[in-house]
Image (cartoon, rainbow, N blue to C red):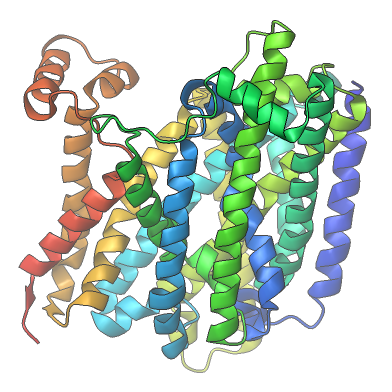
Amino acid sequence: MSAPLLFSFVLGYFMLLLIVAWYTSRNANNDSFFIGNKSSNWILVAFGMIGTSLSGVTFVSVPGTVGSSGFQYYQVVLGYFLGYLVIAYVLLPLYYKMNLTSIYDYLHSRFGIVSYKTGAVYFILSRTLGATARMYLVVNILQIFVLDRMGIPFWLTALIILLLILLYTFEGGVKTIVYTDTLQTSCMLIGLVVCIIAILRMLQLDFSTALIQLEKANMSRLLNTDYQSSGFFLKQIIGGAFITIAMTGLDQEMMQKNISVRTLKDSQKNVITLSIILLIVNFLFLLMGGLLYLYAETLQLNVKGDDLFPQIALGNYLSAGIGIVFIIGLISALFPSADGALTALTSSFCLDILGLKRKQGLEEKAAKRIRLTVHLSLAIVFFLCVMIFKWINDKSIIDVILKLAGYTYGPLLGLFAFGIFTNRILNDKKVWLVCIIAPLIVLGIDMVNNADWFIKKLDLDGAWSQTLSSGSTFLFNGFRIGIELLLINGIITFAGLWMISSKK
């Protein structure tokens, strides 16, 4: 397939985004950037957040998991649904009651300035690592299959993409992203459906027959009933629920779009609608993964995991049109997570760290100048992180970053839970210490539990390797901690906060 042809479609797609951004950012101010003037349409927010929730990792990685674990990822998706119910009926009423611009202002009101800054710092750290890791994955696919053939270096690709993201988020912020995310989610879902139909035709199957074939190939299994496994269904459902609560409900990027909706009722409708749509969309991604493996088997193509979808879509195994649809769908999955993260991090740094809203007498123009400077600086940080991931050049770096999310969102989960479910008073000056110690304890637990993984990743040998392996066998005896690591972190943080608190 012609690389210049694919590249021309990518440029055309960007031009469309810039037109939308220009139209939506007219007369924008700081409130437009931070919370969309609290006038966003809930239907647009719900639809656009599909792309933000899924990202390029879902577009590439979820189909790749079917070969090894079937449809078991759907256990996590069911947990997501439960988590969205908690967000809609516990967290959103709290945020609207307090009329928050940054959700971490809750920690300021409830505990004090140290808790507030600690929550914001953890969000900034986790979202920066997560967003740039997802961005690296997609940029690397574009580089390998399109831009390497045109002689364009990786660093230039990453720089140009970040500049384009800057162009369409610089002025409008959330006000613009609500519309661009809607456009990008539409392109991503169209790409998903078109690819499923194309592969069904290549396999000469209809929907029901395809499910029968997947069952025969043992790729449609849903529930894991091995309680010692990290994929045990109760672990996955509970872990999925708390991942959603922490990484959506306690995440400024995700919630600033929700609180940009005019009323609480509309915002709740947005969240519930999103949760139902995600049940359907994630099933379609898993279905496509199964179909890709069936098709790869007919081609005698030995490829799996993250390489499966791009290799088949761009490797002349399907039509040129499907390759174009895949590229557009892929970058449509990338940008809702990258542009939203950049905007949310700018908002959090300006509001939570620099305290723009609390500065008396600061003029709109001066505040805007600070905001634009922060926005540009964070884009540079994004570029450096993407280049570091390229330098590491390890496909499993995404797994590492997702594991780190369990460490960084745990303190946020503990802080918010302590504030909502107790009326105790914290020693605010010691909160940062608890929020550092808790992830370190969790790291130690995780290292012992997943000794083999850490020994391989850290290239340990000798006494360290033997100690970890023996400790894992003695303490856990084959029991594997999975995505519930986030919940464990939150519980330890909660316990630590209790120890430094007193009765009201």
